View (tube, rainbow, N blue to C red):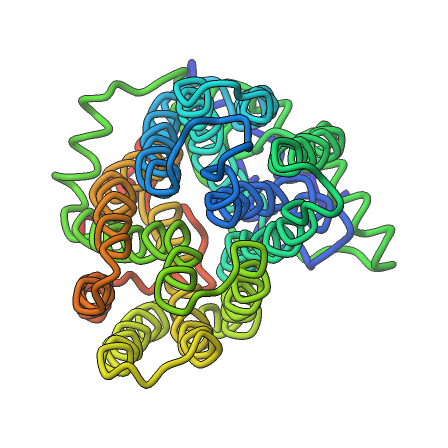
Length: 496
């Protein structure tokens, strides 16, 4: 058996030597990995569906007869900011629990929170109710970011980790396409009344979430989390079974694992140690993560929530037709990670992260100039955004990949949560609020300013990545950042 030689070998009380990381990293791509991708990755489709529906139905909910006394600016500004604030809070709350109690327990809990809050949003009867459950929906989604990204990176082999992570995060835009097209049907008053169509849009998100929940039951706990937290035998049994399945599928034995690691098992890690690790041991990586998240969060949260308002305000696009335009830029967003993702594993992280951020920033500056010259139509503006976001989407997805893989195993979920929350609070809460005010004014110069702020932050983040990005392509997570629980001289060698 391929696993026999790599079973955990006790060294002393609470200490175990295991080849689990090496065994996982040397696995060829298989049906088991597809199950992981489908079970965990499809949640971003839900997030994209949620955010896009809100952006596209804002005009309809604000109309008289929708069943809610609320303005379009409140939906794209206040409600959007509350959704992001909920996501930041949920990331921090559930991120801590994910590192302590395991990936699987938390990615089941967070999807349940999302489902309940979305269902309640569909039943909104007052603006305060709508605001409350937009916050709670974000709370569940934020928890998903921490639990899912950490689980994906710990289960996917190092050879494929970059492209898989990018494509999964980019699948958000498949949901955005669905949300855009769905809103066209749901906003057609010939099919659904004004006070019903937007509610059914949210209800369909619940249905999709229930399907994902059923698939997710079969996704296992991360073996990397298990062996550190005192479940070494469970980790070994799980990897044994996966190896048997893959050997049967491929019809040949697996190569031997590349090495072992000795771990002093522990149940939890304090906030003080997490902070010391992230900021004292890896200060350059902390600056990198924060820069990437602030740049992409401002750009994406501002434009995602405000694109429909721009089309309506400046180009007189009917409320029920904005979905067609958004579906186009959503397609460009998904194609970016899909077509460029492999290059993050082959060309390398530093070149690809910096170039996608800088190029998208420069293209956005050009779009702002064209918009200021008033030479763009609704169609040509959409085309410009499609090109900008083709590159920006790959860069934005790499922000999640970066903070997930460059910090030690014990802090992974909390690191994702922290940088997501801090970066998104800076750009994702202020972005929609500022952008809603600027686009609502109907003044071209105000919207140009919003474009330029987003472009400037993306370009600056790209320059930071050019100097600080970690060459993590095709490397084991344990080699990129030594586990804090690792025993021996190797554990103290890496500080950056």
